[in-house]
Amino acid sequence: MGTAKDGAWKFDLALALLAALAAVAVGAYAGFPQLANAHGDNDSLLQLVEVRDLLAGQGWFDMHQYRMGPEGGFVMHWSRLLDAPLALGILAVSGLTGSMPLAEKIVQVLWPALQLWLSMFFIIRAARNFGGERAVVPAVIVGGAALYYLGIFSPGSLDHHNIQLTLTLASLSLLLDAPARGWAALPSGICAALTIAIGMESAPYAGALGVIVAMLFLAGGHGERTIARDFGLGFAGISAFVFVTTVPMSAWGQGQCDAFSIVQFVVAAVGGAGLAAIATVDAMNRTPQRRVMSLGLLAAALGAIVVLMFPQCLAMPYANLDPRIKTLWLDHIDEAQSLYKLVFSDPARVAARYATPLLAIILMALRLRRGGWRRQDSFVGALLLVAFVVSAWEVRASTFSIAFAVIPLSAWIAKWRERAETSASRGVALRMAAVWLVSVNAVWTGAAAAASIAFDTSKPAAGGISADAVCESKATFAMLGQQPRTTVLATSNLGSPILAYTGHRVFAGPYHRNIAGNLLALDAFMGPAATARTIISDHHVGLVAVCRGNPETRLLTFNAPGGFLAGLVSGSVPEWLEPVAPTQGSQLELYRVRPNS
Image 1 (cartoon, one colour):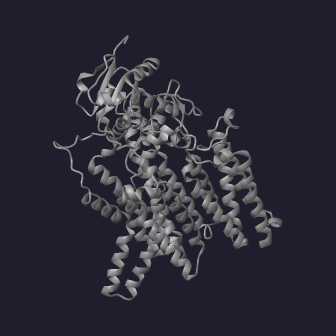
Image 2 (image 1 turned 90 degrees about the horizontal axis):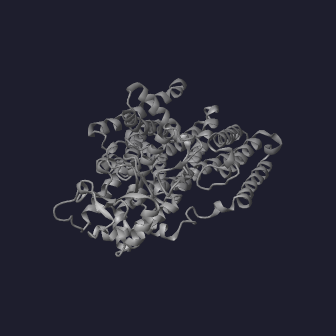
Image 3 (image 1 turned 45 degrees about the horizontal axis):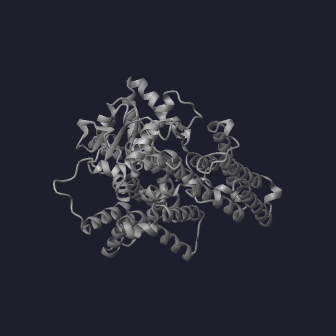
């Protein structure tokens, strides 16, 4: 029996691989359409651009995006930790194939598939620890469907969302394994620190895991001491490594709230090393009272560090955004919508994004009410609750809550499977089938989509809708790519595709640090033609690109009906612009600035 348990991870790894291969097979059968149309995944496109820049010789510590924003570009808040494996993968594959474009496509397929494989493995491992062997099959089915339909593991998904979820699931799974596998806490701490280093969106989940480790050590004493020590060492150690290897010495004293910097390093180093020290020094942990005092002092020190040294990071993440950018960009980002807004604007999406996490929370609450709360429940329950709360603020966090929900839902199905085996009856079978159905997030997504279509009273325009009316397909930018390289005035939604599919540069892009570039585009498009002409002349713009069907174009023309963009959409072209003839009437219309105009 012990040997079977010791080798269970190999079985789980194989099951996860089968799930990932099935997803790749589905994509291959369809011809990997995401590689030709990113469907608005601007982050993955710009991630590819960033990797290309690194391979072309841009410095490791130089995080400027020179082709977006005003002259000189702006500094991105992303991490080289993601650029490195993508760049190495492209280099390795190009060495085998002799083609850099082919290598990019292969990595665009293999990288998200690898993340899906690992995420499935850690979900299966966590479900096994949480609900026993009977929870493994439900974890494969429910987890596979959930991750597949989240979309962050689709071919072409190169941004940070999938790797952050993978690392968070790895940290959780390893902590659940830690009592049986003494080495697991150290890599768990490493994974928790890495997910923060890649992007601050996962800080609440890494923080929640650290707090639960500390609380279990407080309550459990010696039994959790080694786990707390190793988790803290891994967390602090990798944070120091990341700080030294990704932050230039010239910026060591510059605090950044949206990227890994001195702020995150100091908090991680003090928190991780402090937890490890308390767990190691007998005088600090010998009795429950001493553990309470020691951990309390550590928490007070961390709070004082943030309040006194980095008070700017206590503000809301987008507090310093220009009001126009907030109103015309941030408030219209799909993944940044709150649960409150979605209830009124898109109730079908509420069911798709919140149903299974809420069901899982109810199951955890019932478990707590019945008593018998276990170590595993603390980790899974805390992550699930934190993710749900964050997702109520911004729907993008539901990516995490949906994945975490798979674990208690798989255990719930496992109990009904056991009940069906011991007391088979038609009623039990029907209840088990219902449990299966409500646990699969894809069922809620499909039902929500069907309801949305059924109650949608809007009718398509006569003559149908263009295949790429919103300008997301690579083919749509082919004509633009044939024009001599210049600066293109376009809306922010088109910024990343233009950089990825052409050699041009742009002002606008959907990134909160690109304030100056986005304001330039807004001033040009929403102001009168004379203002646009001045901006175009001052910043050496050679082309204007207009996508009539893009939601951002409709938004700007609605808010500024007398503006330059609204005039172009209505057919009023100033004399200093000339239409690029082959593009007129196409999805992406181009206008060339006349020389000496």
